[in-house]
Image (tube, rainbow, N blue to C red; front, side, top):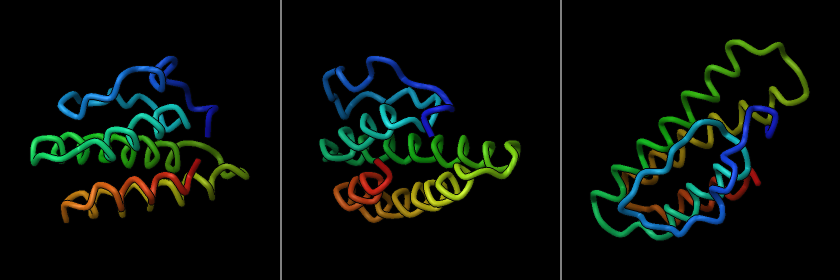
Amino acid sequence: MAQNGHNRGSATREVNPGHIVSVRDFSPDTLREVIAHLKASTSFEHLVYREAELDAIWTITGFFLANEPVSGQHDAVKRLHAGAHKAHDLVAERRPGAAAKVLEGFL
């Protein structure tokens, strides 16, 4: 999945759940940053940001699935696409820790 870009240096930034993660791809670095923010999120505002980030991952993986030729990576991206949807639903249920566990399964 790393072929779709990297949020270079993102994993080293300090986690502030009051800030939105810039999701430009679905690389392991991006997933790690979203996971870290999910684990630190406690307020309603934080959860709204996490939902937006998960929406972005879902959208980017959807574009990938629609536009890239079927390959060995296609099935993994399809699972991540579904996982981002599941994680989003868990955040909506105010369960960001459970959502983080879903995403950790893709690292």
